[in-house]
Amino acid sequence: MEPGRLEKFPSPGRGSGLRALKRARPGELLYRAEPFACTVTKQRLGGVCERCLRRNERLLRCSQCKIARYCDTRCQKEAWQEHKRECKCLKSIEPNFPPDSVRLVGRIVFKLVTACPSEKLYSFSDLQSNIEELSEEMKEGLRHLAQTLQLYLRVEIQDAFQLLPCLFENLPIG
Image 1 (cartoon, rainbow, N blue to C red):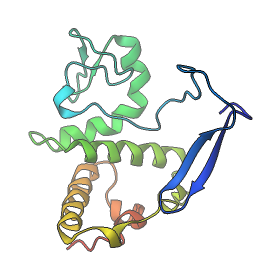
Image 2 (cartoon, rainbow, N blue to C red):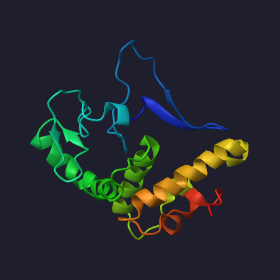
Image 3 (cartoon, rainbow, N blue to C red):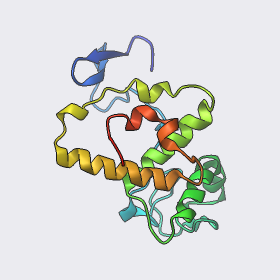
Image 4 (tube, rainbow, N blue to C red):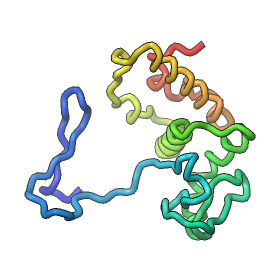
């Protein structure tokens, strides 16, 4: 963030906000950042590069999982550090395929574990919970996604429930 242009602020009941401190011109770029994590949706797989997210009809396919696709060898090499753990997970659940949300959370988990393998994952514990506001049907859907995430991650992280207790603490799974 450019100092003096934008400000992060707490927004009660909504989390964090971002506001401009100076008047901006229409179309002016205020902020640019690489996403912490992203994933190509299942419906777009095969037509979008996993690294740069450009659409392309002629993409290189990961030789391991056969799912991830890349513009060229440069994009593939740049993505490998982040893709290699996901690659093992994708291969381990063949012929099944995880929901987009599970794949995205898996990428977030891998990034956090790689960044701080022996430290507490403060990023998760800093999140605000809204579990008490969810219907029983929504809670049941989240329980199912949590179980799917556990199965998906098991080849790389044997017990995601112990690694990320704050993610699962309000979702009794059993």
